[in-house]
Length: 439
Image (cartoon, rainbow, N blue to C red; front, side, top):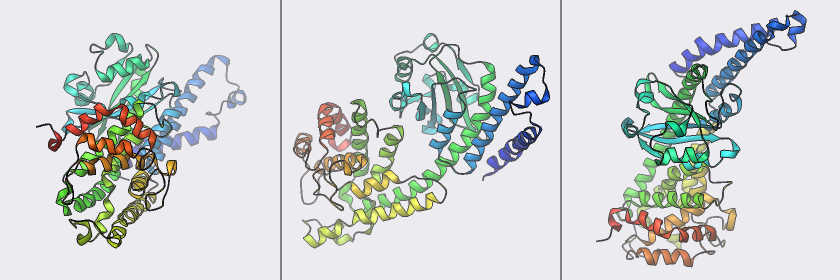
């Protein structure tokens, strides 16, 4: 437990917890206790207010305890959404984190009422320059903002962020800064589909809540990034051994992310593609060949075609890679985290084929995790469009034709069909890389 958490628990949570226990012993926090105390009817509203207050404190204490038990941040956010609606009206909670040295906010986490289930997905990854918004005072000065008529307040309704919220039916919002040791790390906003939903009393309650959220978020990000950065460094080492791969990791990751977004736009695999899925595809796609750190240079860097024996040795990179990530995941599980599940899926299964002829397990169809099926398309496409000592780079058209040809054999038919519908948009991603720009 860091100093911030320790102080927070010692000076707020622990005294509150002890107070609640003593009140409970006296019977004052039990609704049935009114009759035993023979409280006059006119005092009932007072006791209801007291009980409501203790309910809030109980929930805050449990939130802090969850945070100290290393519950994942997604778990913390779900707990907040489930348990605080009695005190704060909301149908959506969103978190945007500061990026680009504080110049930009990126929508990073979100959870909504089932009626707004698409809202977190639509907002995920959206970036906005703080200077172009009214969020500066929140981030820089720590001043909460209440909007009780979003459409009337919003000047630029065509901005992506505002348009998505208004189209979803959001009418009110309350936004607070997230800070660690007075350093801003982002904002949290609670939104409602009702006008005039927020009052000053809500600000006071949420200011305490936002401190707990910031501590939990900061700890989770630190642990995740520390583990991930170590593994990404290993992957970069493997890539650096083979100069011909160039910026393969960046390109294939961009392809995998865009394919995932196409699937989301076409409402495919809705039970799988969530905000977390999109974030994890971006995070773990670059790790797909991490196991190549265990392949000998004579095989990995061979300029010609591999022999059958060499090819069988090369195929072991999925085994080496999955073992590395499983070891990392085991370490995280000791802290009650699960971080690398998708990474393991991608590393182990990105060479499986839809028709069952791939490796290492000859899985077929939907036995192959969706993440690995997406990365398979992205990885092969970039390999086809890349120059290697033993082959020329194929054009976009020829490479795309190959992907279409392998529909139902190497690749998931639904993914290929979706990619074909978004061909022109996919070409824009391909053309965005320097080597692929038209002369």
